[in-house]
Structures are given as structure tokens and as C-alpha cells.
Length: 234
Length: 234
DNA sequence: TAGATTGTTAATCGATTAACAATC
DNA sequence: TAGATTGTTAATCGATTAACAATC
Image 1: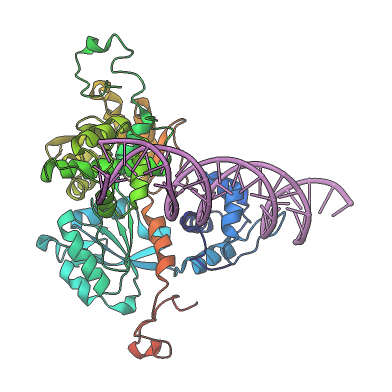
Image 2: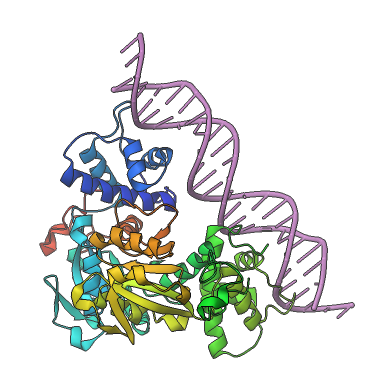
């Protein structure tokens, strides 16, 4: 029942969202109980899905009264194998690490960067949010006692293969990849999740289907003198 | 048959990857024919899946001889509703826009940023890869003739609601969101895809399950004097 | 024709939705 | 007890895999 590998991929991903949400709820609202419906509404999923997801973890709700937020938070933490401030390493330019820290302040989500690495010599020694940026090659020196087992990779494409090798050697076998590689190539046994920005943008294109032609409506397309390159073929 | 809305979500996403791949293939290898097996191997999916995916688009292969790369590229382009250099807008700090351009050079993927926007006054007027950064509020002035229908949003969390409103007002109803919002809230009818970095990192955690305890093996955990906070509970 | 590969159909697998009995 | 909400089972939906006939 409480085995992450038996739960569907999609469920594990949602459970991690519930964990983020419960974390926020705990710091703000206090200790009222929480219903599956509330979680569902806040996160934009169905309440049945929430209950089904929670049935995978070691947590019991009270019929008629929902779940205890603190207990739920801890059960999610245990299930996902997270610790209080779950450690991770990040790889990218100083600039990238800095901007990522802005859109995604780790501590808010219960995460904690323990090391930053950049492939650029100029970045080495700089400080991002109080953490020193080291050179890529220093991944090999990563102290396993820090306990990081996951990495966020957002470096330039040409540094990706070397980065993955170094991470694998340092005992980090799970990676979230932001650099879009056309042909994924990882060390054997490494678990790599891709967020492919260009592919996602392209697949969005098919959903919007250019509602009205430029300057409104067929027949008047020429009125504004714009080229609308290739868009009018269909 | 050739209707993007009838194809499964997962298929559309893969088709956009095939499009990226064919783009690369065309610029490098020339005009040999391409087999479903080749595509499958390169991209790490099964060849049956490739053929099934391609059956949704307006493209015929030759039994025994595969597909014509140029024709396939164009068929994918048409199906996905892409144009030669598909336009998009991006929102984020100058730093973020700059770093994204490094990990994801748009032109390599057949995409083209037509406008950059930042919420930070200091960023306004700066240039990223030859394109001026404008202020967020100028999204409202976006010329629909440019034909952008999708946006990449990677700004600070507090600017997200305003950004989405502005984009919606400017006729952009499809967004790829890199800023992780706990509770998604979009304008009615807007299509928002989330890449939630913290959630993905957390869900990766459950897959690695901390193979050996720090300093190798149970019983010797204390030998290195590390705390290993919370990690050894299971 | 023979060999190779496509396109499609059937079978399996997995995830979500709906319904409802159990229970606080 | 009555009301509300959980947890689970059955039904549906969707995607992938396997098999194979069609065809270049």
C-alpha cells in the first residue's frame, strides 16, 4: 500500500503537489482539518482522484471530517522519501541558477539546494543566494553525506553529457532536465525526467489553431499589410 | 485523421518531438529516407508508437522504404499548426530570458521569439540576443499581426496573475508555465501547461529511495559523523 | 519475387471517473 | 441518529503493445 513504486507515475506526481500544497497550508492557515474536496478545488483535479491518490499512502482520513493537515504532510513526506528540507543539487550558469531561485524559491517548497555547479569558469566562486557556485568538475567531489540524490540540470546543451556522467559518478541517479536534448543519452540506470520547453510550445500551437486571421476574418487579411508567414495554409 | 484535437495528448507531444528531430536531421544528414525504427531509437520510444503517432498526421510512408524526411517535416509542421519559424513571446527577468536562450536556442528548434517582457523596470530596454526587453504592461500593445499565439512564462510568482491577464487580453490563450504556482488560476479558456520543477524533483525522490545510507551500509552510519537529517526513517 | 517496413486491428495495460457502502 | 466525507469497487476511458496483413 505505502510503496511509491506501486503507485502510478501520474499519482506520484500529484502526491508531490499535495505535499507542496500542504506545506503552504501548514504555514498559513493553522491546523483545521482539510477535505479532499478542498485539495481538489485548489489544485484543479477531481476530489475522487485526490482520495484515490491518498489511498496509496500511509494515511487515514476521517469520514465526515477529512484529514489532519500535519499528519497528511508527514505521510506524504514519508511516502515520497523526502526529508524536512530535501537536498538537491543544481547545474547551470550563475545567471540561470539565480533566475531559477527567483521563480522557484526552494525553501517555500520544502526543498534545499546544497550545491551549485556551472560549466563556466567565470561563474566559479560567485554566490547565488548564499551558496557558492563551483565548477562542474567538482561534482566528483560531492560529499555523499549531504544526502542529495536528485539534481536539476539546466546547463548549456554541450555540457549535458559530461554533467550526467559526473552526477552518476557522484551517486546521483535521478535528474530533472531542463535543457532540451533532441536525443536523450544517459548513463545506464539513470532516471531522467525531461521538461522539453520547445516541444511543449510546439504542442501548444496545435491547440490554439490561430483563432481568427490577423486583422480579423478571412478576406480582410491583406488590409493590415502583414505577412502572416505560413499560417494560412490550412 | 489529420486533426490535432482528435490525437491523444501524449501523441501530440511526441509529434512535436519528431518535428524537432526531423528539423535537425534535415540540416545535417541530407535527404536519405528515414525509418520509424530510426526515429524510435533516437528518441527512446518504440517503433510501433512512432508509426501509430504518424498515422494521425497527413503523411504516407513507403512500406519497405520509410518516410521522406522533408515531406515528414512539413506534414508535422502542418499538423501542429506551426510556421517556418514559429513565433512565441517570453516573459521573465532579463537574466532568465538570457539563460533560457542559452539552454534552448529557439532557432535550432524552428521557433522564434518575437517579444520579451519583464516585470522589472531595470530590465526594460536591455537586449537579449538582439531582441529588446519590454515592460510587462506592454504586452497589451502586442501587435496581433506578429501571429504569436503561445507564450513561455518564467517570471516571478507574484507577477504571474497579471501576466496571464495581459496575455489573454492580447489574444494569447496558450501558455507554458515554468513558474510553479501552487494553485493554478488562469483566465477562462486559457490553456496553460505547467512544468512544475519542485514537484518533479520531489517525485524523483521517491524513485531513488536513497540506495545505501551515508558512508555505506547500516550500522556504520555514525562513522562519518554526518547528520543525514530525516533520511533514515524508512 | 523476396525482403523490408508500413499502417491498422486486436489485446493489453494503466489511469480516471462514477457509484456506493463503510464510518466517523 | 443524521449528515458528511472517506475508501474501495466496478465501469469507463485512453494509451501502449503486440500481431499481422497490406504494399512498396
